[in-house]
Length: 369
Image 1 (cartoon, rainbow, N blue to C red):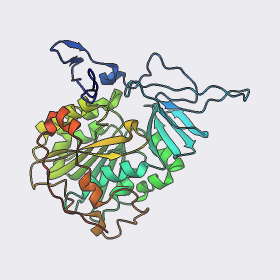
Image 2: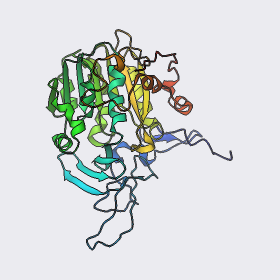
Image 3: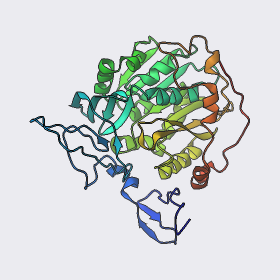
Image 4: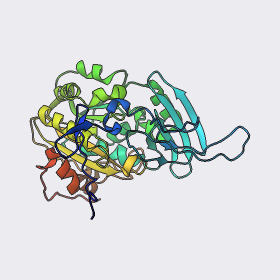
């Protein structure tokens, strides 16, 4: 390869607004690293009422004449346009916290968008919802008390309720509009709210966790939006400290952790904080979700000090939980074999995120139905 070809995988951004350019001097971090700016469209972006930042919508005009299709850019993934054709806008309102949009896509079914960022589609929601839930819950024996942070669409609740050992499920979602919209337009996800074990708390998760009894939960699942604006607080050390305090010894956390292709600087920040906070183990896993930027999403999985947790080999395999495979809806993505494979990381990610250098390799037990 000529010149710098092949070196683009390494992200050289760090916290604090500065980054290394490789020769020892500092320079300003590109806009994709400035978390506070990531929810704002780039200056070059054009505007259209049916398109949200970062995503493409079929353009329309009052006259019914054809209008040129417009693409948008978002600094969270600069230089990229992630596109879905919009057949019909079903819902668009602003809540107290964000803009909520639902539209029908011919390829992916109904799509939920918050502040210009796709949260889920009917076609591929299974990958995210099932992995973020079963990676932690299948790694510990008999989880009983579970907390879901965010997750107002109900998908994580649907998956948690597959586990018959669970006795109590708390969910803390700040935006009631997301819950109401999901119940109306995404009943296959919102079915999770119907489980009698679920206790809904509408409010700030940071405040909720501050008042949570110490050691109450076996597992906490953080299904948050991207770490910008108010959600940035959910990837900082004080928040992780409150989570660790709310978990029992040997309890587990699973936290959405961005894309390894776009945000290794954020991943490294989060892993560094969790290594300091959780005294058990800290792992990074990932899954394929086609409608997320770069087509993948990561999960940060941690355990508190106590009974050791082997995240790579599921001790509580979903295939052996009675009724779990068919509960409310058949499992479409997760299985024990995929669970173990999720922890296999690309070489560039191990090189770039120094905290992953010691990630153990093992020969996991694979359970097949």
